[in-house]
Length: 82
Image (cartoon, rainbow, N blue to C red):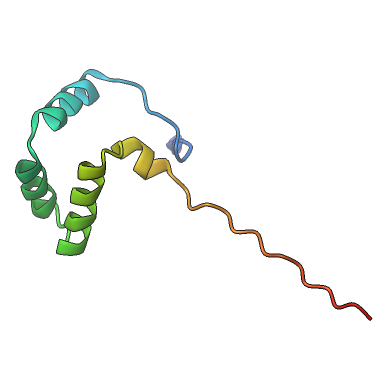
């Protein structure tokens, strides 16, 4: 009987394998134009490329952007006085 693969928990940091370390080094050495060209070849559209460029210029780490959730908005309860 085949075992089903376990999907990692969303937002959990993965182990640093040799492949991951090599990818990270290559990623960090690329300039912005090379990043955009690579992302475009992977199928990102102009809007997503602009978002990536904005993220890079503001200095937001990629991991933080990927795991960041929208802030919760609490709605105030409105009660009518009688």
